Image (cartoon, rainbow, N blue to C red; front, side, top):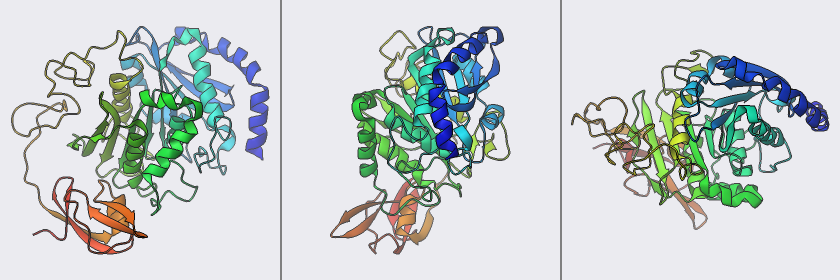
Length: 439
């Protein structure tokens, strides 16, 4: 009831707050490189906004990044520890971090990503959409409507998944960090439901987009998850990437590549280029991964610099600006000169597979990878755990009223059908699995 009353009041007073807010933000030009805070903005309790100290990178217009916190957190936590300011300055990007209205779902400061009954006018969806529209409309912020992005952590990541489908006309890029899957209920986060279907959720996403389905054809997506996350199942990382690849028609899955801080990155592409990025971070728990931010609570700074990575991903692959006069992709490999360490060689780019020991940094990681011998690993557990693992060790096909599981790699059918049969698979090469134990 508290949240409902808050939202009603918020909508009644919205026009008045807009006039007050425009006065507040008009002075941002005097405080470039600093955070400012607005209260009661489009239904949000507060919004922290960072105005960069640098000029825009593309088309003389700024990008906007909206970032959503997780449960039992606040937007001030993200402002202080999520490490956005250095990336914002690097790209000349405005960052806005709202606090979930009225204590959030269940009064636990959670964004209400739950279930499938989402519209552009219910839950917290309308406030987020209104925030993007409001900030984009402010001439003093100089934001390009084609460079509006959203990212979120935990429940914020789940909410970002919802917004990707509801408002593809507004958000050109979406990033989910440790987020539960689209359409899950409030108690479906520790484990991926055994009957969770990527195709069903892709259809849900397309249905949610309504009159804006065509805008999904130019949206891009990023997901990241720690392999040791005990709060939100790492399997949602795979599902998030698979769902959006189906939504976008990005059916070409690249080979997983090792990232310097431990983990793997996989890129899904369509006929034009990259559309979906998936990162699994080895050994990371339920954390927002920063570059030089916090290193306690829900923050870790010795893994992937996700604010920088996801921003770079959006800038390099934005389908709504890459037909304009922006960064050049001289070798036409899908990566602009902003991030491509050799834009004259299509075999060298951040999505390439590095050949160890040849003295060439094909993946633009900063150094040539060191060759090492792979030691076969065995995994014995339930079929559904093989499927939900990160990286995924099995796939499945439902027919004759039964789930049949197959080793992801060799495609051999595992000995026992059903999600709760215990089987053994072996990882004979990194990311390649076969039926049975190591030989």
